[in-house]
Amino acid sequence: MSIVDMQGARGSGPDDHDGRRNLDHVEDRVDLACAFRWTVRHNMHEGIANHFSLAVSEDGSRFLMNPNGRHFSRIRASDLLVIDANDPETMDRPDAPDPTAWWLHGAIHRQAKHARCLMHVHSKYATVLACLEDSRMPAIDQTTMRYHNRIAIDDGFDGMGLGDEAERFARLVRDNPDKPILVMGNHGVMVVGRSVAETFDLMYYFERGCRTLITAMMTGRDLRVVSDEVAEKTARQWEEQPDLPEMHLRELKAILDAEEPDYRN
View 1: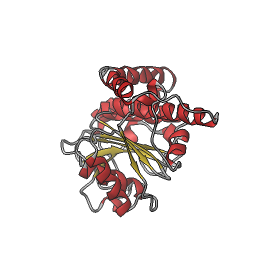
View 2: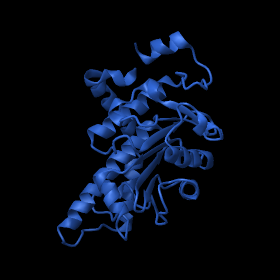
View 3: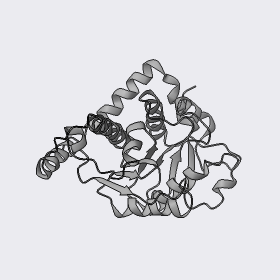
View 4: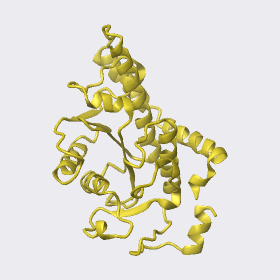
């Protein structure tokens, strides 16, 4: 049964407090489920850890998020929780989310209204960058140039994202709306976007840019870094192609429709 059929059978309304979830926001759910599946295919996942969220209310305080303990490769559209960042009883729910996810994503969605979609991963090369003393990304190819002056860096790691740690990340995202990448020092990366398509595209290419940078650094030779002017020009050329993320996601869904259609369920 598809998610559309399930929605018709169960109706749509507020979340039930016995752990059941409504099936509103069908297309948002499908897009987010697709992103989880492809994060696994690109080996950017962390098993049952890490979380993606997508705001579904105008103020951003209500959002979809993956359930606790579910492997990214098994997530379906109907599995996604609807979370209210302002509900203090969230962690008392039978289907309570992972505590670190509740703190981190809840804090950002409360404080940063532009952060409609959040994708947090410990992908290999982005995490290597986060572990360097200098976590800046020099502009050495057109992919790294996409992120020129568009990366915020946190160097205050103090645990796994609970309480004050989450609030600090949220302030960084809130205060840097023009920087969709938050490199979390000693931790990983948080990617911020206006939609699932945009956020996944930014995450995917950021990991590829990190891979190019780390591989180039491993040669021990000097990097060929372009000027700030060329890097900014190239970054703007990326931004002047706003349909690319949507086309990217469309193709990813088409592949899953043929090979893993249960993601839509």
